[in-house]
Length: 357
Image (tube, rainbow, N blue to C red; front, top):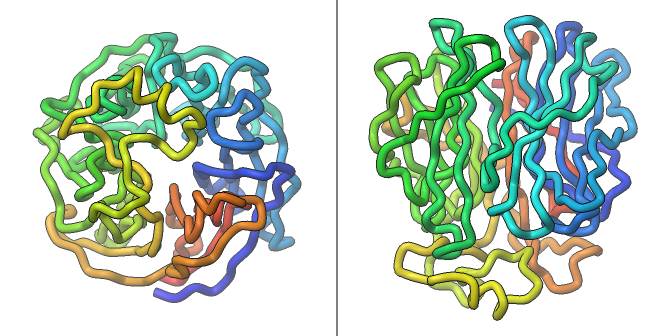
């Protein structure tokens, strides 16, 4: 595995995070992320850029949402069986993730034009990170989790929204005993899924024998996790790849039950019931690693260190909260056989890297 090209995706924002990639039918790419002054601020909106494969360049970012009262986050791109592209994202009242709902826009012409903003799920506290998958029966499976400030988000749990009519109606299936396991990433085969862990100990894994309609209790893999997002990929050669931060909590001074975007820590703690199962925040988000598996994620082999400078500091980050932060990655395999990844680079911009497999 080798890096062959790296690019910064243009952005008008000081802070940029949570990217997601998609290949288009002509070989171009779309990348979406959220940007603004700071995560959780009401000026955080969803942005979209297109990579022109022939020209080898990303377009200027287009703002896709602009709710003045809500922080719009965690966008995901999905190719619907009809051919439509869906752009899904969350919208919360500032830093309160317990108020999040899920919204979407649709495109009928490969992302050139987009329809109006719609509300997909209006139950408050509903969060997404990864796009839906289509199971072998043709049902849509959208992994979600319910987020709550109680226990400093340590009680967040994963569920799957299931639709048998293309997304007109949905039923909800809970992942058993998944408290603390979020960002469920279902593989397209619907045999295995991977999770971020609020306790910042390990990446977790569960399996399904019925096309993703039900899942086993999540269990720890050998890979560490820092309570930050991961993404996995089923390759055309049969391997699984995963991109993640190879680090876990270790009682550092920076670690606490308070998320880094919270401005008033005492007010946050006053609203929480901190326990031994509370989330752990503040674990460094480096190094950024790609690993591979040939046994559905039971064991892993390191393939590449993408980023590892733990001391690099953004010019926009006076407090050093995002020092050495290379996080929230996305990974896809494109039709030319190459791998494409994107990730937050010090929150300054989204970095796009092309690799040979």
